[in-house]
Image (tube, rainbow, N blue to C red; front, side, top):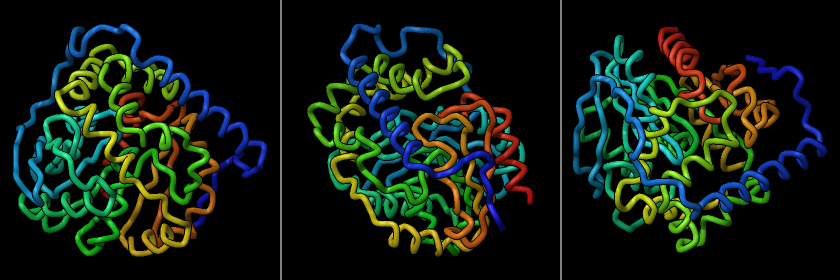
Length: 318
């Protein structure tokens, strides 16, 4: 199918503006961290959906995930700086028709935070071991941010097991490290851990410049609570330490393995990932649909929860 992004033309001037904006965002994050901002979990906590918390050893990792509902399995993978909780609106809606499994990625929330290999191939293999352990023969994937980058490896490794893939807020072929200076910043483990150790400050400084719609205080408290758990600030930077930028040919080869239906779901006004990043994706995936969540930034699942839940359910039912 032909995917068009209205009003988006790939120009060098736009690339330069985008680079400058990303640099400004990175500076804001750095400037904000370390400032007094209160302790994690000191505000009003949200009402959580009715879920069952589970812990499983698989692939050499102690995993925490939540489960709700019955039916065809749908796995949710979160991004940075999040946890299973960032999907709580979608869990409530999607679990009405499906079996929902929302995982705390390794290093996050209540999952394992031991040192080891945090490269994308390694983490994806460990996740597949988790899916094996809990009996997920076939499943759909819903991913966001870093969860999407990891999800790409999962989906391409076991394409025969993936029913559908809903991929949110992550570049497809954009592999220029120069336009993502936070990767270089966070490769310094001491620096990154120090930044993330104040969960309230770090989460706030990441969310504020990347959102269009205000996220509720209770939602922010839930995100801060989970990111502030012991060991997270030391574990999460290992993803940056072990991250390797792949070239475009390698990315294309990965996506060509995804013969199942793919929905690329993107916030209209994400300051770090403009819509023109996604021009031409119909040549990248064998079967892809592109959908924009209007008036939303990077954290669409919390900014526009009803719209995101509807998009997920509509795509899964097709």
